[in-house]
Amino acid sequence: MTTEHEINRTFGREAVLQDERRARIRTVFNAVARRYDLMNDLMSMGIHRLWKRTLARRVRQVQGQGGRPGGRYGRCGPAAAGPRAAGDRV
Image (cartoon, rainbow, N blue to C red; front, side, top):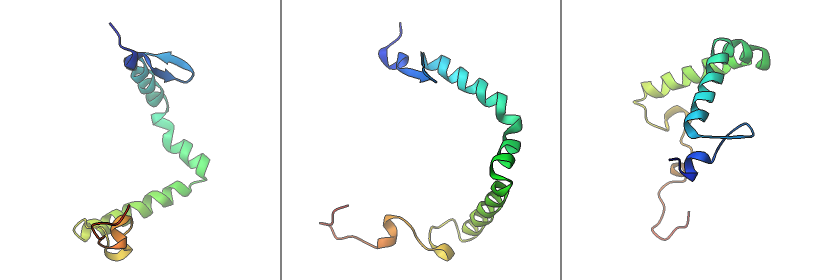
């Protein structure tokens, strides 16, 4: 017996069961996986390779700092504002 939650899934514009949706997504992924880098090269004109190198370099730098946020690139997000008083609103 299927529940409403299991049926309330879509693949494109078609309502499908959750397991069927997962199988279809896997099929699409497998069809494009081998050519994914080529597709990125064409769509970004190769710039995505620069982005990947830059990200990898920054991750290595953060790992060299013990994986702590902050350091060379500074903090971001709520922690950047410093400690809050107990009555402060978010």
